[in-house]
Length: 349
Ligand code: AMP
Ligand code: MG
Image (cartoon, rainbow, N blue to C red; front, side, top):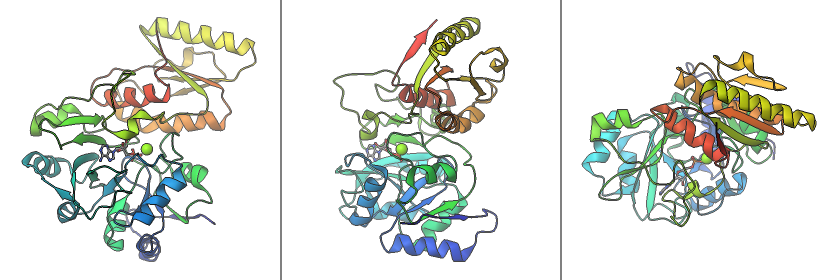
């Protein structure tokens, strides 16, 4: 299969290209498209065969459910039951935006879309291209991140092409995404809502609308014997091909440790990549040192993270050492992704 890539101008969306994408979705095919979080791989959520194609294209385990993307509140009522007051408040405050809610599903939603669960994950994206695609197609669009399963999520159309070239008919290229990490996921099916995945909508925001929401166990550590509530969380995720180790501690100690580890590997002719910050990059010795941004610019750090992991793969780096970040605010989502990408390998110095 030839994979077409259409550049789309968000401020002046080409209707013919949009219609072509919509027609693919309506006939059960796949289209990758930008959202404000990461690129999604979309299919008609109500068509079980279409959903199955997503799993096949990504190599995604069939028990890892998909997020259904909608463009208006009435779409939610088509697929979810028991929509609580809290869900309404959250939608009012954060939709369209990077918040996914888990609700009980209506019978019409195929199990293929929900990975066999009786619940459904729903989000109204903010990206104009995503919203117009949902509306033009008349479909509710099931879309996980448009990467090969396990790899870092795509923040550029080029990342999607790299992973899925020849496996899908069309990519809508809307340039670099704005947020760069996946949506915050909240499970609203139990008495007490719980955050299953931290994201750009942080607890500081949530607190103002519905009170603080606890975060599910096992987000920052490997917990054995606990069944993950978001099935996707049990798989290795967001991972570059190289090994990744985080180093945590006082800045001076971190720089010294990373430089010592790097020298050791370079003696054995290994290519090493280092993820530093604007404040520290000039002090590292590695072959490839990249700044993820200024420490105080957490939004920038989130936006750059996956691209840097992918860039190191392109450079053929065998080992990556990264500084670690505060677990407050957006930092919680950044550290969650970094720890998963590192397989929880973290050195305290
Ligand atoms: P992705 O879009 O690739 O980030 O994957 C969607 C994420 O949402 C995965 O981590 C899933 O496990 C999670 N998810 C989707 N539907 C549900 C659901 N019904 N219950 C719990 N987690 C879900
Ligand atoms: Mg994903």
